[in-house]
Image (cartoon, rainbow, N blue to C red):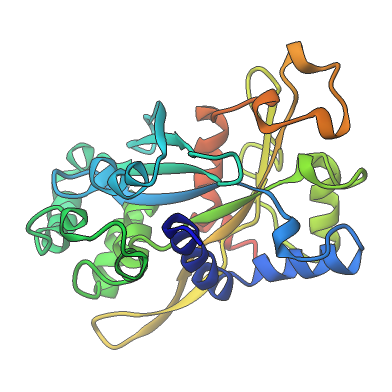
Length: 298
């Protein structure tokens, strides 16, 4: 098994334990006879959140995946959320795309920056530079270990008022933010976002409805939806435990590009479908961890 496979498996193993919706969806699909196991699900992309400062952010985090053959693609800017993002194409279509975002820390109010830097200043240099990127155990440990001290509940709440993204990263760090089921690869009756959302709600999942439950790209070839984030029990510096947003599951339908509409069945490969991402869609998907959405969970 390649190092990249082991890194991705390590991410999914911890993420599945932390996000009950992952196994709930998989088990329901197995019961319906749509798939036989998790391996039958195509993972469209996985996403990570970071802090955009000189020793961290996209330019640091991307090194892990560039080392393993990923290729940088389009960049995105989310003005209202003060975020940058970039996606990366995998070395082989069997692997998921990678989507990395970062908070534009310099665009935050002074008080917010002061709180953020009180944590980030503990990271003196780019931590990825110290890793042996061919040692999957080192990389796996790095993606799940704290980079700075445990946040205080006070700081978390102060950040949340200005940027829920900032609060999420300060606590959750590099935990996998979400993985994405390619619904177009499933059997008929489940292979459109509309049908799949109906299935998800039938098994009791709550969907992010910011901008509508289905987010549609301008060319109408990329359709996305997501669950509302799981709530996880978090320990804070003061010794208090609070339930805060953790991670979620995304669902994606990539339609055939116009020039390949004549293809059917097994003729269709990933390269024949709409690639990349859409700022308008992603902007609303980010809100899966926002309180306006998580409060909808019963």
